[in-house]
Image (cartoon, rainbow over all chains, first blue to last red; front, side):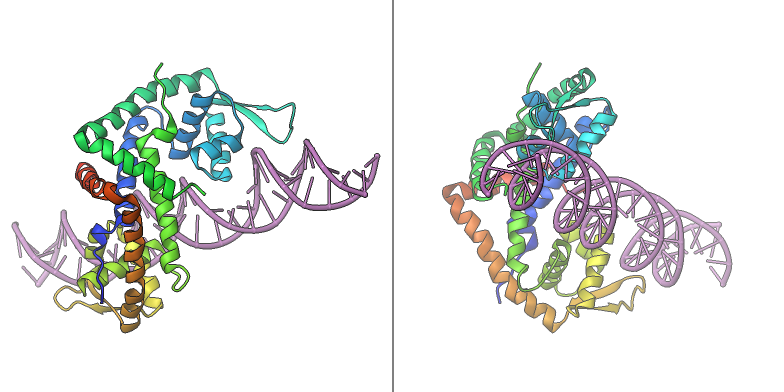
Length: 144
Length: 144
DNA sequence: TCGCGATGGTTGCTTTGGTAACTGTCGATT
DNA sequence: AATCGACAGTTACCAAAGCAACCATCGCGA
């Protein structure tokens, strides 16, 4: 009978690593602004693209529309984001960050990039191959 | 102001990939036996080590004790696992798989290994570097 | 041997995520 | 113009996960 060592099993290792990294990453925005991961993703996406609909945010950040909906509301209550009903299509709404939202983003980004750079630096020469392999796997496991 | 592209951001990519892989992996044990991830982990750990306590399972599979507790109960109700009170220490219990449990495991493992092999094969020469980088990151982000 | 902090495991409460149903609007077809 | 399927977004409901309180037992020291 074939045997499987869980600690060497790829899906398990990816899951574990991903949680650990996310966990650590919380320290980047945790202490100052208390964000959840979905909120962070909405913030990052809106900052990246300016103004967009909830649907588009979900697509870009790989989040289900309910997750987006709740994260948007949370950011709105925090006054980091405003909604504006689209004139062309009244089903959708244009979302954009407020000045405080942009400012918070501006504070977080350098720390986020430093966090990532720290990991890549620790990997040294292994960083480049990792990113390449990651890209290949993303191709093999598309979003939907 | 520095900018961050979410789709290239390492924590995000890891998270996304990990979910996608887990999602796909469900197809390995999903159709035949309807297992959750924690249940699968308990099953795999017990099959790997024979008889052990819930605490030990949690340690080996990186799961919180409540997660283990509930997964154990689910497997027990499925008659894939039995408890036996330890004589030396009556706080803990010795857990082990039943014959049906072992059999289910035996059916799943080859498919799980094939799943993993498929990914590694698709990576081709990138597989080896990926595993090395993974090991480095695991070191940098220890379980606790 | 009594007491007490530590430990294995379970349970209850709260938060979070996903699914499905719903609301309102759109565009196309009649 | 009326109808109907598709679609954006919200909400209600349910499953899963974490935290903290809890229970029983252990082992140690007074």
